[in-house]
Length: 570
Figure 1 (tube, one colour):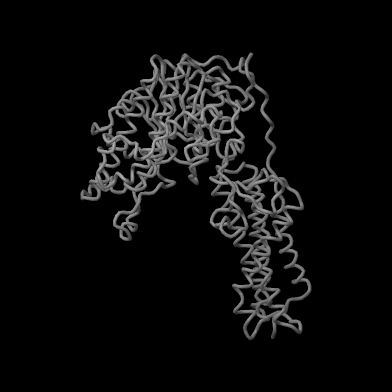
Figure 2 (cartoon, one colour):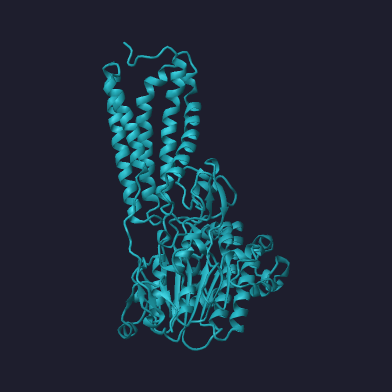
């Protein structure tokens, strides 16, 4: 007995039935983009264009996948399989929506996460209804009656309505705060140095062995914390979180690229794409540019402190320009990648270029510290870090009034990716050999170079100082199975590899270890160390355990509504 009566042209019906599952998946995918990008306006025109575009792509994809069915001798089977395929698509989409809510927990507002999970629940329910209908009719070999067909269409169309609905819980704008209401910061010179890829598993052993004298001083006289990275660990959002004290959904920088699409609203970009789908490769999107400070919705420390009368400069941090903060000097990370406009003023471009360090300009004495076979590899990283550090230190020396310096050095990241595995084999795993010995020397020499840069920064000023060394994530050695595939596999930055936080200054507990510190805690902790109140809208919290009890007793924690609405004091 046939389970579903077929029209006179089974092949045409089979082709149509094969298109439907992919089209529904594509429409759900289009709606998911509006969930993941809450800033996109909910406008019917762009949403319909996106739905039609991805429904078309999905329909073509499912048509190709089901070609053996509709192109065979029994094309009508595609129609009979449609209820099962609908169930499968709804189940996959339910899992996809739930996955995004879990994967991007730190990147999406809580309201959007809740709506994603509710949409996933409704899609899952629709899948169960469709599956039950298909099972009953298949098991009993019953034909699909009018009510069953209407029910399946209601489930399919209802799933589209469910995923189109998107709301976020209302968050009131914090009230304006004047600089005069915040108060005066402590008379402390602040140095914040970011080291890409710095790992406690390298700093602690090397400092203990006497190779890193200044790191060893920080460990003895200051405070240490292992810094668990954000999940998922993305470089650009992580650095902006360290600078703002807000999670990615709060500061607005959620990825390394913003994307443009013909179906988007005018002057709108996609900043977050669904995980696991590689949509940037096949989804009709253009990787427009690296997001700059215009995409950031929260103020950084280098924008807050000058408004409080603390002369500041920043070199090499991402999402730095354009800015309205009265910085003494500022060079975005993009400046060192060749984008000359990524300086805070045109007058800075000439000195920024003047201090450029090419690989051929590196000191022979510096290169001699590395094994001969590795010099061609590490010289590019050394040149980048040398350019940034010499520029920052020279400008800081040229501006005696400078009271806060922010410097980021990315070179260690690439070196660690290439050599950390051999270092770990020699130091952490006890597997000495020619390869690991060379890697050990490279890692040790590069950390020794950074040790000297930190000491130079510390000696720039006398008097009360606060030095913060931070890395948003560390490096771990490659998995054992990787070693079977390559002679010397590169190490990897892993979401589970802890970063590093070191703090040195007056009033700190000596030799202390802070537990459960998060990246968003850095800004509140620095504000507290400077004697400033905390913004209530910050996602992190102050770690008073870094300071001596007497210091904490003299400096109670205070709050203001927000630094994002901070105006100039009189």
